[in-house]
Length: 429
Image 1: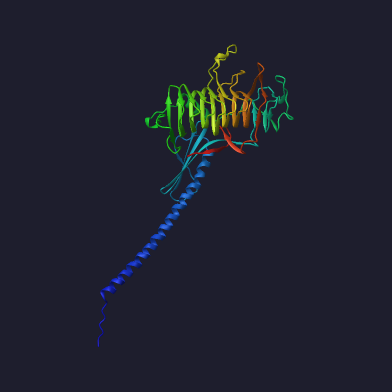
Image 2: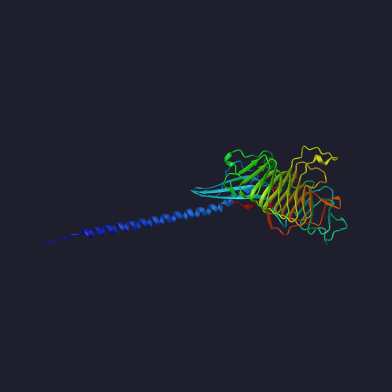
């Protein structure tokens, strides 16, 4: 007797359905596992990109020369991972860019770079050796490490006021040299280029100052700017980022302007009362800052006098340009205030004036004459001090002023000086 078994078509279809379902589940599991591993690898690569970007920044802090192009650096890496760096001048500071690549993942880190200043180890005061002693008068207070001429420091007397402190210097005294620590040659070359040669060559690099209230350009993009032979007045504008504005005549910043991280270049730069922001001003004749301004870190005011070909006539001071950085009452600058002349002229004209109740939190560098009536928290490098009081000019006198190293961070930065290590002043965007 034979048994005949028939498999119904519905059962066959169910069997095929189960087989297909199992195959799809297995394929899904395999795809999930592959996707998980891939995403994990991509995520790990992205995190490593961010972490190893610091290797690129560190290499830029140790790099001595500026880069004309982006360069690739060697490091312990895995397959398909690359670091590229670029170092260029950005006003009185440097701009470092590092880009890390892993497969198609890209991460860019950009920073403003300057020389390291350590509040408790760097000089609070460096007064050039001119064979004139430093004289302190009135309520003057100098605190920190002071590098002074061989003659040292004395107390003095101006307009009926003697010195009222209990110590002449509140800190250690060292001997200064016949020259101030020098800025790097690249720094001087860059300032010369900005003032004498810089122009915007390509139309696509221009910005239209009348195009809108707010103009922003990322530091990951090419530098853009505005150039004019005529005076420029900046008002009712918000300008930020990788932008340079240059006039061959003058630039005036009104209170209604907000400038962030940009560079201004002109023979004369005027900053109205109560201006706030964070920017660099580079001039060849004069910089005038009004009352109650507030510039955040790392701002910079730089006056550069290329006077190496000037023949000084001591009987006629008109042969010397009217170069001066003037900071009016109640203003605060966090960053660097710099005066540089290519030929030191032995006169008694004042190149930087810091008025009373005004403050510089950072660095003053002046290879001319500095008159301080306010407060510098940080460090001062100067050839001489002057005090214009009672109708007379007192050389190397500091009258009713403060130079101290307490009200600043332990580590901050200033302009690039020869043989000095570098640090990041600010991360950019």
